[in-house]
Image (cartoon, rainbow, N blue to C red; front, side, top):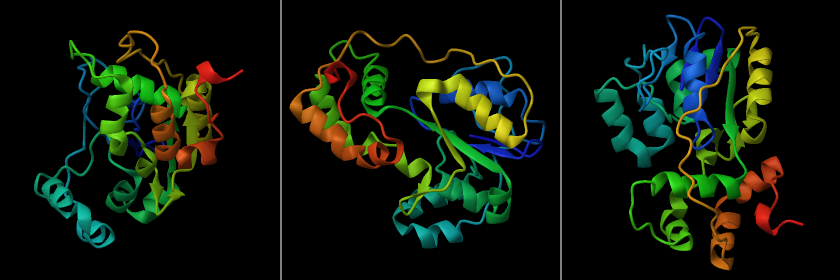
Length: 229
């Protein structure tokens, strides 16, 4: 996550959408008082800062009692911001007025391509990875990022860019935020794909169910690319 007070924008990081590359690029222009959360990779131009802070956990505890243990753990550790912090608690911790004043954005990806990328990334160190269909069945509750940029089923960021047009949509987001600085995206977490996957009828059924909201909201094709004419 990146919060630039200098440029008045908030970047909410989703998974498998070049989020780390975007963070690395934005951290260079975000300003010294920005919130920049740590990356797994160490990069010379990426300096995490200001992500530890106190926050009031009560609004989150009332809004989502099921997440009370995790919220209180973050509160005790003063971990106000972290890499994949959802937009709803981020809005609470920043303050609703500031959230509404800043330009907020994230990125999303074609569900078929996103799940494929997740599979290869999460099994990259497994010498005998499970079949794709088995993995999808096991991880179905963890596949969608809808909750990262919505509240009660409603998108609460100003702009959802598409991974498929990453550079153009990132430039569009920054233009809307009034940021003229040039941006160069590094390539991080790439090169893990080992070949195509087979979307069996069961795997297709799961993807269509899990990502039903994304298909409707963003108009992604309801068939994997290999099955499209």
